[in-house]
Length: 173
Image 1 (cartoon, helix red, strand yellow):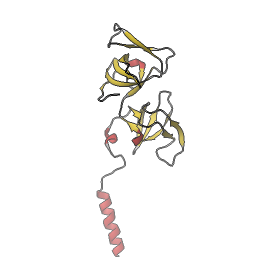
Image 2 (image 1 turned 45 degrees about the horizontal axis):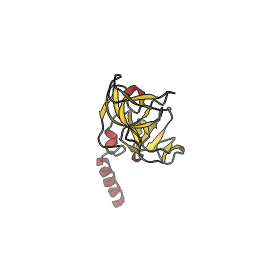
Image 3 (image 1 turned 30 degrees about the vertical axis):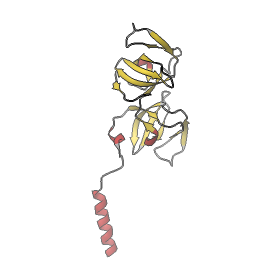
Image 4 (image 1 turned 90 degrees about the horizontal axis):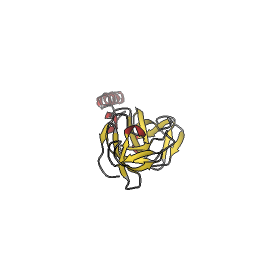
């Protein structure tokens, strides 16, 4: 009788506890959204949990991926090729990076200003990783990964930012 009473009290207390199936700041962020990988070894699984087999492993940190679904602390992501899988939220960062036009075969102009009339400072090869400092909806101020090279690239030539999206990031690359 005492055991049944204790179980009843525990069940009542458990009902009063908040639902923590989706916890933390990531739960309030919109989907879809772009993020980057924190680590150089990131497992991508076929389902949302460690019981699911590893589908492949990302080996490049700071690589951009798009989150389009969430299950608890697991994020379903896709890369620029359209490959999809699940990554634990801790392995992802809100830092905004992009790949230069991975779908193109030729380079993309990086300019000194946000206009087609601005001087071309460099031609970036497809799939070059860049850090996004700011986007105005048409142009993005970017910096090449591991380099001091910084300039403007048309937003439509980047995978890691949505068409027309405006953003301003903080911090240095």
